[in-house]
Length: 160
Image 1 (tube, one colour):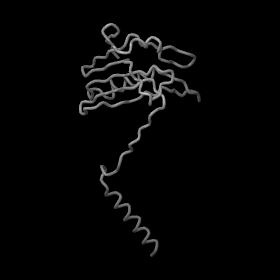
Image 2 (cartoon, helix red, strand yellow):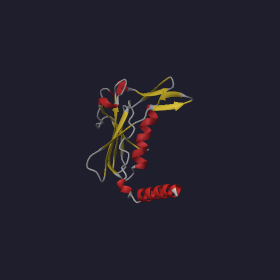
Image 3 (cartoon, helix red, strand yellow):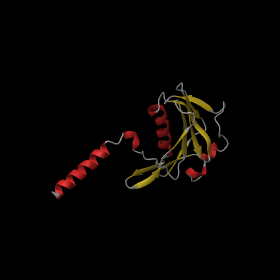
Image 4 (cartoon, rainbow, N blue to C red):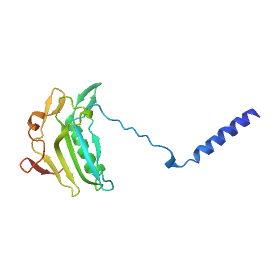
């Protein structure tokens, strides 16, 4: 009789839990943010008035070693705009932080690397260059120090 009561209690609990609507369950609010990121994507969606920030993940793990791969992290952000968010955004810009250790909290993301618009046009900063040091691929920040904004002299339309 005692086991029957336990089973009925458990069954009653499960029925009550299953009657909760999906929108009453709180979604997880925290999204993993890296401590250091060279690039930050600002994207304005069609259905939102304010922009959304996404950071790049620059570390690549290979054979139990961590390498910094800023080339692929930039292309992953560009792919996210062009493939995942295709026809869902108004305007998007990828900014770079030119510090030696680009901390996410420093907010020094003021150098434009790539701009996207809703017509599918992609504008890239001509001064952007990657240098390879050992097994790490890093952004050449020395060239970009004077070319923070994309103007008519140093941009080009590209196709991805």
